[in-house]
Image 1 (cartoon, one colour):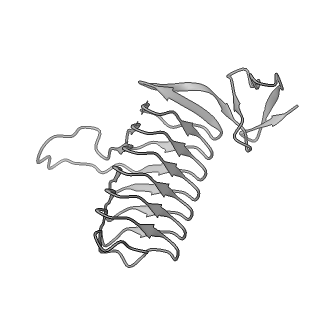
Image 2 (image 1 turned 180 degrees about the horizontal axis):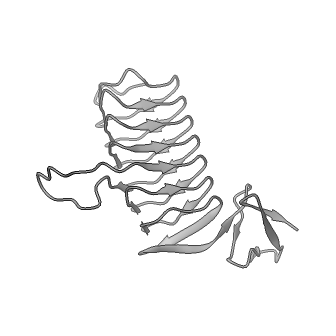
Image 3 (image 1 turned 135 degrees about the vertical axis):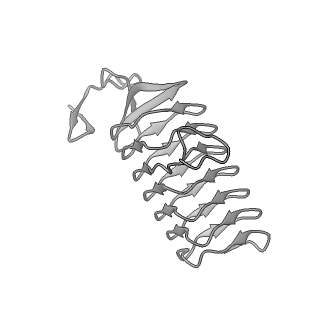
Length: 180
């Protein structure tokens, strides 16, 4: 479903994807199946979005951003695509940003260009992420720093790999926290 008050130029939008009002999607964008593109979202040309992605209102996704399957992008997340933004810069270099599958980015976070967010990583609301993250890690703050881990079942762990609610201890196996 593409809302009649949106401005969609891309023909590369998967089935069962919803695009809500006041969103703009440029011609070269590729968007997967079963996505939910909320109102007031801008998606530029050189953008790849996987299946089952949710993008909340007020997000701009600039050229060079690649988003994997089942990613959650919270409201007003800001992506960048130029580390040295100068008006009318003839030396402009568009840097690629990769968001791997199952990652979640909290509301009002800023994501610096040229980094990669690992599978299942969680970026806390209001964070300023300036470097790449490993899979299954939790980051937050300004600048965002590594604060813990997240399991396949979305259980939050401290840096000591311990569940603060149950006391269960985990260990890392191929980037994934696994219960001992």
